[in-house]
Image (cartoon, rainbow, N blue to C red; front, top):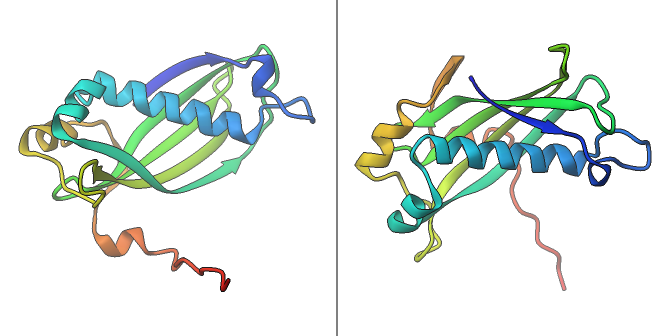
Length: 159
């Protein structure tokens, strides 16, 4: 399990004086970036490969409040990866200093080719590194169908 520690700042709280939804998203993004960096997916490596991560879906479950000045730990484990590495699913948990689980989030996404703007699998060297990511006990091999399991499709406005 990968973990990153944070302290809740004034800018992280909302009108209810607890950790704001947007702060949860920002802490998870920071944790994912650090995780990828620490596992060989640095900005330089991603730039060389011409790829970047995109998030399709974030589903957060909130259990307990977190407040200004409190330390929190955000964890990351990989709960799914497609055979070519194109699709990924990450699980994040938030913990307070007592180890109590404050929130859980499942995030699914993919890698995009920054030139063609199309989804792409990982190069062999990056895929080798991705296959060494820490995994959840219920890790699954993902398919394109898994990315559409929620059944949501775009509904454009008629202008």
